[in-house]
Image (cartoon, rainbow, N blue to C red; front, side):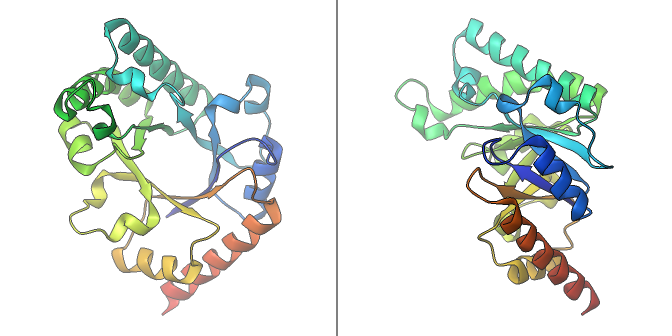
Length: 231
């Protein structure tokens, strides 16, 4: 299992904060929000901690995936640019939050919206594959069925860690699972051990979560994971 720090916003947290906290806790890397990431911040050294991925790709523009032809072309270019940036940073994941399909029913049927979005995403898959970057789909619209229909190894699910035990969820489709400071560390450790999860696990911290609180939670989780493995 690869443990990383997922910083939802660069508000109270800065890139150096994230890198330093991850290094102290011996985590694999950090997941940083693309919209708030500056070029100079991305280049900061991280004491052996890598930028594992970028979140918030297409933030605020998710509906462009189901817009008109020009709008979809813009969304496609933005996703391609994010994949190239991931490659330049050595990051392995580009995370896109999808809108709930039923919220688009006033203009499009669910099937139409999914077909348009899948077309855009599928067109970006070859570049993602060549750059070894996984496009991780989260949000209400990121269902197992939708990701399976795209049928590409570089198009994967990002989901809440608690949902990993959901009936019928194929773990092979999951690239990233997210936990938060409010989750019970012991219960989460038992769940992950029971399903033998070995993918990326990210602790998502918001702008309101002080670094010290997140670090304490992560220490509790690591201890619980060690205990579960020893049991």
